[in-house]
Length: 159
Image (cartoon, rainbow, N blue to C red; front, side, top):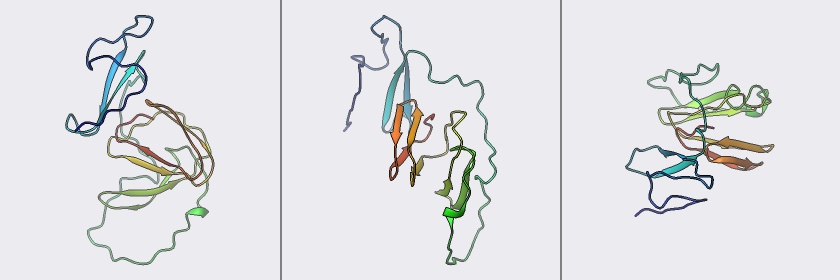
C-alpha cells in the first residue's frame, strides 16, 4: 500500500503538464533509489535545480575507497576523534575511520563553507551533529539542523 504525503500544489495526475500561477511549465523530476519498485518523490521546479555539465568521481585524501583485507583480527581500540583538527568543508574534511563492505564510518569537522553541491550515488549518508548549527541546502529546500540532530541524506540526493 502506498502512503502518500504531499506538500504544496501538485497536478491531479503525475507525469502530465503542470503549470505554476503565471502559466510557466514546471519541470518534473522523479527521485528514487530503487527504480519504480520502491518509495519515490516527485519534485517540480521552475528551473532545473543544478546545471550538471559533467559527472566525475572525486578523489579526496583520507576518504574511501580503501582496499579491504580478507581477514583481520579484532583488537580493542581507543580512537580519539575529538583530537582531530577542524579542516575543510563537509566534503573535503572527511576522515574515514572504519570501513566494511556495507558501511563507511568517519568524522568531519568542517571549518569552511561548502563551495559545491555533491551527490553520493553509492549510498545514503548519515550525519550526527555534535556541536554547532546550520542548514543543508538540497533539492528538498533548506533544512535547518542544530546540535544533537541526525541528518539523513538519501542516496543520489544532490545537496
